[in-house]
Length: 125
Image 1: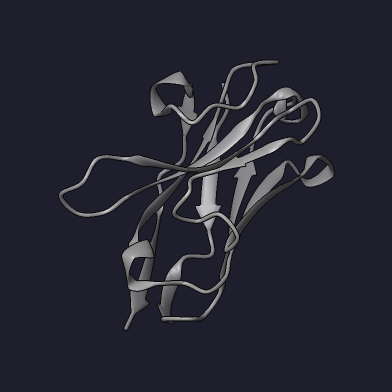
Image 2: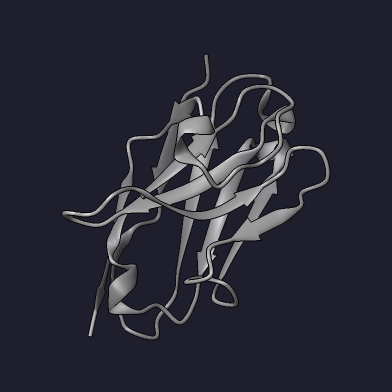
């Protein structure tokens, strides 16, 4: 069983930055591909970014490409999402997710097995 705990959300002005962290329990983190998703009120959960377990290859949604960076620190069992040049449309609850052991990263939320509780990000205009 893997438990994920997000932190780092908050209120920021447009153009500002935030860094989200997701701490994972368990011994399999280094072999788990990780993802970030977000959900705004009244909308479906959408893909933000993913990072592979094997080669740290990353993939981003077009809406965040060039502004957000996903990274991982296997020694700390933590995945990060650095968010720069934030826009009001980035406002959402951000969720960290993990795939089962040794599966590649994915942009599909139904392919993730473990989820955190979410952290709120609010960007004011």
